[in-house]
Image 1 (tube, rainbow, N blue to C red):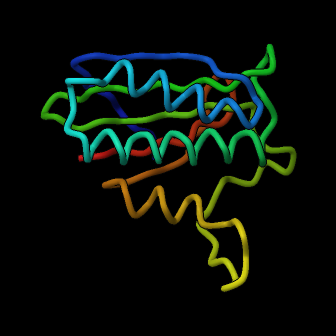
Image 2: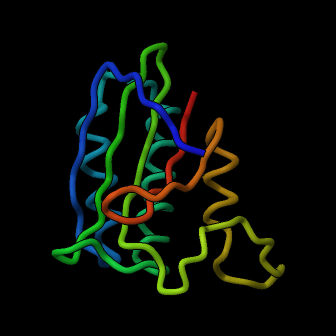
Image 3: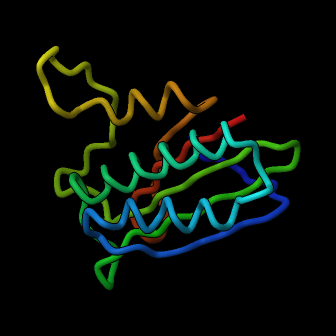
Length: 136
Protein backbone atom coordinates (compact mmCIF):
# COMPACT_ATOMS: atom_id res chain seq x y z
CA UNK A 1 0.00 0.00 0.00
CA UNK A 2 1.36 3.41 -0.93
CA UNK A 3 0.52 6.31 1.34
CA UNK A 4 -0.32 9.81 0.10
CA UNK A 5 0.51 12.70 2.40
CA UNK A 6 -1.47 15.92 2.83
CA UNK A 7 0.57 17.63 5.50
CA UNK A 8 0.44 20.91 7.36
CA UNK A 9 4.14 20.57 8.25
CA UNK A 10 6.86 18.09 7.39
CA UNK A 11 10.24 17.34 8.96
CA UNK A 12 13.01 15.04 7.74
CA UNK A 13 16.24 14.09 9.48
CA UNK A 14 18.92 11.48 9.05
CA UNK A 15 20.19 9.55 12.03
CA UNK A 16 23.09 7.14 12.37
CA UNK A 17 22.47 3.52 11.42
CA UNK A 18 23.53 2.62 14.96
CA UNK A 19 21.63 1.91 18.17
CA UNK A 20 21.94 5.57 19.21
CA UNK A 21 19.99 6.52 16.07
CA UNK A 22 16.71 5.71 17.85
CA UNK A 23 17.58 8.13 20.67
CA UNK A 24 18.53 10.86 18.19
CA UNK A 25 15.24 10.35 16.31
CA UNK A 26 13.21 10.59 19.55
CA UNK A 27 15.02 13.78 20.56
CA UNK A 28 14.54 15.47 17.18
CA UNK A 29 10.88 14.44 16.92
CA UNK A 30 10.16 15.60 20.48
CA UNK A 31 11.79 18.99 19.90
CA UNK A 32 9.99 19.54 16.60
CA UNK A 33 6.52 18.56 17.84
CA UNK A 34 6.66 20.23 21.27
CA UNK A 35 3.50 22.29 21.67
CA UNK A 36 2.00 20.97 18.42
CA UNK A 37 0.62 17.63 19.63
CA UNK A 38 -0.78 16.28 22.88
CA UNK A 39 1.54 14.60 25.37
CA UNK A 40 -0.15 11.25 24.66
CA UNK A 41 0.42 11.57 20.92
CA UNK A 42 4.00 12.68 21.56
CA UNK A 43 4.63 9.60 23.70
CA UNK A 44 3.14 7.28 21.07
CA UNK A 45 5.08 9.00 18.27
CA UNK A 46 8.37 8.72 20.14
CA UNK A 47 7.74 5.01 20.84
CA UNK A 48 6.89 4.33 17.19
CA UNK A 49 9.92 6.25 15.88
CA UNK A 50 12.23 4.42 18.29
CA UNK A 51 10.81 1.00 17.32
CA UNK A 52 11.04 1.68 13.57
CA UNK A 53 14.58 3.09 13.75
CA UNK A 54 15.63 0.24 16.04
CA UNK A 55 14.25 -2.28 13.56
CA UNK A 56 16.05 -0.53 10.69
CA UNK A 57 19.34 -0.71 12.59
CA UNK A 58 18.89 -4.38 13.58
CA UNK A 59 17.38 -5.82 10.41
CA UNK A 60 18.26 -3.61 7.43
CA UNK A 61 21.17 -2.08 5.60
CA UNK A 62 21.84 1.63 5.96
CA UNK A 63 21.23 4.24 3.30
CA UNK A 64 24.34 5.67 1.64
CA UNK A 65 26.41 7.44 4.27
CA UNK A 66 25.54 4.93 6.99
CA UNK A 67 22.26 6.59 7.93
CA UNK A 68 18.52 6.02 8.28
CA UNK A 69 16.04 8.69 7.12
CA UNK A 70 13.26 9.62 9.53
CA UNK A 71 10.41 11.86 8.40
CA UNK A 72 7.24 12.90 10.13
CA UNK A 73 4.28 14.80 8.80
CA UNK A 74 1.68 16.71 10.80
CA UNK A 75 -1.36 15.88 8.70
CA UNK A 76 -4.33 17.99 7.75
CA UNK A 77 -7.02 16.97 10.22
CA UNK A 78 -4.56 16.47 13.08
CA UNK A 79 -3.03 13.08 12.32
CA UNK A 80 0.68 12.32 12.40
CA UNK A 81 2.60 10.15 9.94
CA UNK A 82 6.05 8.77 10.78
CA UNK A 83 8.22 7.25 8.03
CA UNK A 84 11.56 5.49 8.47
CA UNK A 85 13.58 4.67 5.36
CA UNK A 86 16.56 2.33 5.31
CA UNK A 87 18.49 0.46 2.64
CA UNK A 88 16.28 -2.64 2.91
CA UNK A 89 17.15 -6.04 4.27
CA UNK A 90 19.60 -8.42 2.65
CA UNK A 91 16.86 -11.02 2.17
CA UNK A 92 14.42 -8.43 0.71
CA UNK A 93 11.55 -9.67 2.90
CA UNK A 94 9.17 -6.95 4.03
CA UNK A 95 8.78 -6.51 7.79
CA UNK A 96 5.82 -8.41 9.28
CA UNK A 97 4.41 -8.86 12.74
CA UNK A 98 5.38 -12.23 14.08
CA UNK A 99 4.25 -13.63 17.41
CA UNK A 100 7.20 -13.90 19.80
CA UNK A 101 7.55 -16.75 22.23
CA UNK A 102 6.65 -15.97 25.83
CA UNK A 103 10.29 -15.89 26.90
CA UNK A 104 11.64 -13.92 23.90
CA UNK A 105 13.46 -10.71 24.80
CA UNK A 106 12.62 -9.06 21.47
CA UNK A 107 10.32 -9.46 18.47
CA UNK A 108 7.47 -7.25 19.69
CA UNK A 109 8.39 -4.00 17.90
CA UNK A 110 5.93 -4.10 15.01
CA UNK A 111 3.16 -5.33 17.32
CA UNK A 112 3.79 -2.22 19.43
CA UNK A 113 3.74 -0.03 16.31
CA UNK A 114 0.45 -1.63 15.19
CA UNK A 115 -1.10 -1.14 18.64
CA UNK A 116 -0.13 2.54 18.85
CA UNK A 117 -0.98 3.53 15.28
CA UNK A 118 -4.18 3.75 13.27
CA UNK A 119 -2.45 1.90 10.44
CA UNK A 120 1.05 1.06 9.31
CA UNK A 121 2.72 -0.34 6.22
CA UNK A 122 5.83 -0.91 4.16
CA UNK A 123 6.71 0.48 0.75
CA UNK A 124 9.76 0.74 -1.45
CA UNK A 125 10.90 4.13 -2.67
CA UNK A 126 13.87 5.40 -4.63
CA UNK A 127 16.12 5.13 -1.59
CA UNK A 128 15.15 1.77 -0.20
CA UNK A 129 12.50 0.42 2.11
CA UNK A 130 10.15 2.73 4.02
CA UNK A 131 8.14 1.57 7.03
CA UNK A 132 5.47 4.06 8.03
CA UNK A 133 2.88 4.43 10.76
CA UNK A 134 -0.03 6.84 10.99
CA UNK A 135 -1.40 8.12 14.30
CA UNK A 136 -4.86 9.61 14.41
